[in-house]
Image (cartoon, rainbow, N blue to C red):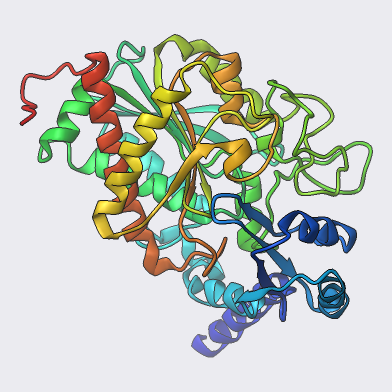
Length: 431
């Protein structure tokens, strides 16, 4: 029986690896000069799957597959554009990620418990959220606010002291996983959830926050896409809903928000990674979040939207160079958060508006939250690293990234609380 099991396990593993290893030999090249010209060449060569611009650091990362490597190299040479190789074999890293997930094969995931220092599949995340809500019902409530095309739930986890069915305190809203391949965004929000839930009686600052705020976590905004990255395509970005006018699947959920919808940095091509959908709020996932935020917008005092990668702490807007009226205030809290993060282990962030800090991006959640819903303090955060692993962040970084990010948010929230007189605790003494 054990030999049969082993053969079956190896067969399943081989099938899974085959599905996820189609990028063998693909490389990520970093171009530090003539970035706009390089991006135009990448578009001409249909290399749109991994194109990450960082304007403060003046580089663009482009993944080049094996078939187009020589033609793209020649095009860069003719344009007198140099590059450095950041990742020499994307497929090898993907295989290593999947090999490390052996516990997901052959049905073992059913009994697996959540590991806060590893990546976890959708089923394990869902199970952990339900466990938290059940075991810590004194401070936590879990609600399914929507259902995806494939039938998965979009969850909201609320955490606060003296929790009730209604929200009576100011809301701190944090979401992640809107882009499926950005696993570290999900691991980071789950790390923060664990910090908030596990330590309220031991950590005076967390207790003070739970007395004063309703923390609202949306851990995986794109569960269909996230699940797909575990089974078929590690670098998938969009959701998995079909498009009526194309065989290409999925909408970029972070180009589907109804604020300056369809502008610069979005695509009308269903096959592109930044396809905006046929209309704003066309997708089950964005509709669910929209309806929740609209119901509670007057209570939301801080919104943070996690992504990867680049180490960027960004303010609205992404649709143009227009600036919110309170940009100086948001930049002030950006500085507090990024300096706090740096103090943990030296991780440095650039901060500024989306449009000029990463790239033009219309119809994004942070623009809608600030521009349409008038939630004054709103950020999009591109978590580490700066390209060493890109979207394929090593598991050894999960704990350090979670720790430093939560510390940055703590210090931002503390400053915001003092400025706005939001704290409702008698135990927290500021020295």
